[in-house]
Every structure is written in C-alpha cells, then in structure tokens.
Image (cartoon, rainbow, N blue to C red; front, side, top):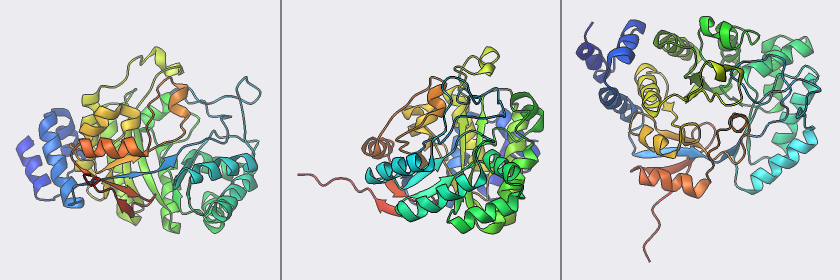
Length: 364
C-alpha cells in the first residue's frame, strides 16, 4: 500500500477503505494529512467561513450509576456534592441563557435511576413552550437507555415520546471510542458500541439529527480510532442523521484513569484527529474544531486542517471543569478568533443553518 495511491483517492473523491484509513493515520505526515483534509473541507463547504453556535452546557444532575473511569464529574446518590435540579430550576436557568443570546442548550447529566421518565419529557415540553428561542439539544445515548430502563419502554418508544414533546436534536456524547475492547476497560457498565449506534440509528429513523463524537487520548490505538470512524460512517449511510463530527481529547484530572494516563494528548495528535476524520468521513458535512477542549490557538490551527466549525461559546460547562480543565470565551472573542484564523465567522443554529454572517466592522 502506498500513501500516494491513498491521497489520489482523496483528491478524486473516492471512499477510503478501513485499511487505507489506518495506513494514512499511521504513516501520513501531518501536513500532508492537513492538505488532503482541506481538499475535502472545501469540497463540502466551499465558502471561506467558519461557523459557531451560541450555546451553553448546563447539567441537571451529576448522580450517575455507570462509573466510567474517565469521568471526574459524576457522584453517587448521597455522596458529598451530589445534586439533582428540578425542572423549574432548569427552566429558570434556560431563560437566563436565552436572555444572554443563547440559541442552543446542550443538556446532559448522569444516568440517575431515581428520576422518572416524565421528568425528561416535562423538561422538553416546557423548554419548547417557555423558552421558544432555544433548541433543546438534550440527553446522551446513555441517558436515553436509562430512561428506557426506568420507564419500561423500549428505546424507540422513549425517543418517540421525546419527539412528540418537541425535541428534534440529540448530542453525540457517550460514544467515547466505539471499540468494545476499549469500552470494557473505561466504561464497562455503559454498554457496548452497538448500544450507542442503536440509539442513534433509532433516533435518525424517527427524524432526529445528532452529532457524532469521539474522545481519544486514553487507551485506544489507531485501529480503534478507525473502527470508530468506520462505524459512524456506515451508520451515516443509512439515514444521514449526523450533522457533524466532534473529536476531543481525554482530560485526566481527578479521574480514576489519571493514574494510567496522566498527560493530555498533544496538539499534533488533535490535528491528526481532525484531519483523518475529515478525510475518512466522506458522508459528513461538518467537522468541528474545539477551542474549548484543546485551547484557543489549537482550535484556530484546526480550521486549517479540515474543520469548518468552531463549536460553541459554552457559557456554562461543568464536566471538563471537574477534571481541572477550564477554557472560557464569549461570542465576541469566538468571532475574533475565527477572523484571526483567516476566515469569516458565521453564527449557526444547532442544525447548521446560517443565522448571520459576522462581517468585518466598518472603519470609522
């Protein structure tokens, strides 16, 4: 196998095989990966724009019973610091966020078996009714599986109830690495790769759109990464329900896994992940760079390695903060970061409709 043959396939818009993807990730030079990724990026999104969303990521509970060893956020019921907010409390928080310009609320928490299914349905119904200016981008696949367990309903019926309540999009959290070899080590109570894919498949069949995510930088190999990309690419062929792919690196602080993986993945590894995902995921329209999880400068470089989106403003975020990793920004800074990277910023919705183009301010 030769790299030139693989890169020629990329230039000719031919789909790579899993073996070719692994070879490219393992043997490709970073700048060559970036060049190929940008070819795909501009084929998919010809305009020299980088999109962003004005969003926030609050949590309704940190009580969780699946004990992932990469997580510093969760608590068991009765432990110090454990909490669950009422629907009223969350709606008040949503209204405050909407008043600040937020258009997307990405809501996730722990898998808390004490919460009845009606809690989740009410959260969606009231958000749609009382905070109509925001999109309820709620619940990871693990939470949806938990809802099925407490309600006695099947996952498709849970999803249909959420749809009937007014929800239309789902975040891609809970995937980590879609390799059961890895999942058995870092999240053995969370379910298999097939469980995550099944929830997404059922959601897309109903009409939901979602993101797909990947958390790397722990116990995975290059082969596990390509297995992950192959799994979501195959699912995307079925319904085209994924709006974007979002990779980020594992943050070890305060986690049980910190003893084994004490260091962050490097910025170079992140650029590899952005580039290989943009090349391999030929049926995804968007790949998201992350100023938040990787640092602002790395996020700016990533938009030159195949990414066409800069993620969200994240007015509130608690999961990475629990791992002692904090980056903060605001809408104005995100716009300026995109401009400084050489692109035109464009604010988008949850589903990637352009809401406004942020033109350069006129000189006085």
